[in-house]
Image 1 (cartoon, rainbow, N blue to C red):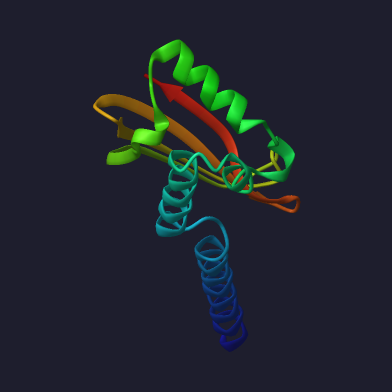
Image 2: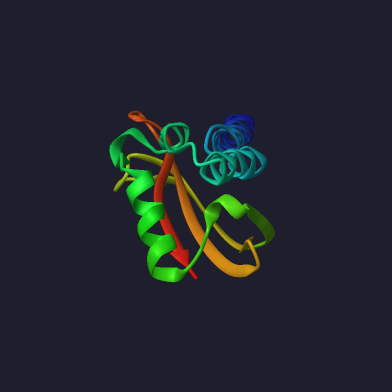
Length: 143
């Protein structure tokens, strides 16, 4: 009877340890909300300054792009002037994936209502952190 209690005790102890391990793993790594917001704020500042070379350093290494051409095309087609500034009015959506097999890492997507000059513009930005680097993986602008 004592051995049955010992076995049950060790089984419960093992389950508790496994649960604690999963809890610790789920809290470590990944992309922090404040870090993501600051990262995007710095990216917007570089775009507003017209420093597209600096802005491109915020892109994920797997997603390089000519941001000067991209933002010039958006300005031309939508009548926007990003040099008037990009002010985040509020965050309206967050999506977080601790690990995605598609990208081989963590993803954090933020949806923001912004002001570009006097115009309201919605930005959707996905930040990815994986073995290949950290940075903006997807950028969508909805004027």
